[in-house]
Image (cartoon, rainbow, N blue to C red; front, side, top):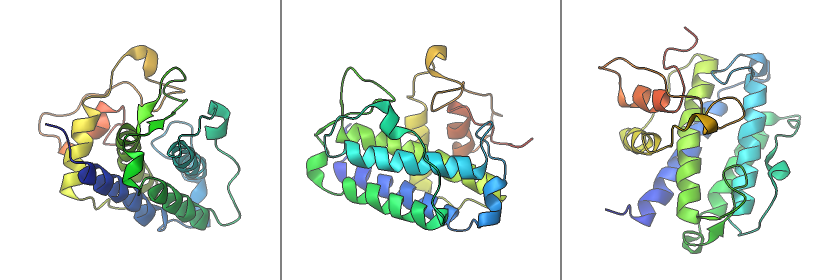
Length: 201
């Protein structure tokens, strides 16, 4: 049964706002912390997250860009404020229901065909549930996440292709990892997308 567009919008906003709630608990001194993203400090992760917000926001207009436009740039002097502004930008970009069926080009996923605005919001949604967890783990703080977001993130995560040629270094997600039979829904979603729920152990 198709998901109502209003639910997609609501969950997308919820995931981005969740990331803002977590990121704004960081300080400049935290930017050197390790993250679950192998080889990335928190500063590296924020630069990536900001670039993705900008990329998805531009894509919502229907503009076709090359992958270089999505690459992270050096952080601003106040990276936390920069992050909040980027999050507001991407939320605003998808607020218009006219975006739902618009051709949206996501060059990191395909340069041969566009996706719909609904697809783009779904991809961005699951990214930011995961990245909110990444930041929370880097800061060693609790991630308070709405059960509906967890349920939907798990449903999306379980549909992400597991083709080894599309998983690992250089791609959005690593190979799926094993979890215990009694793992939480959030842990199952993380594991499906290549995160170890017990990171850093």
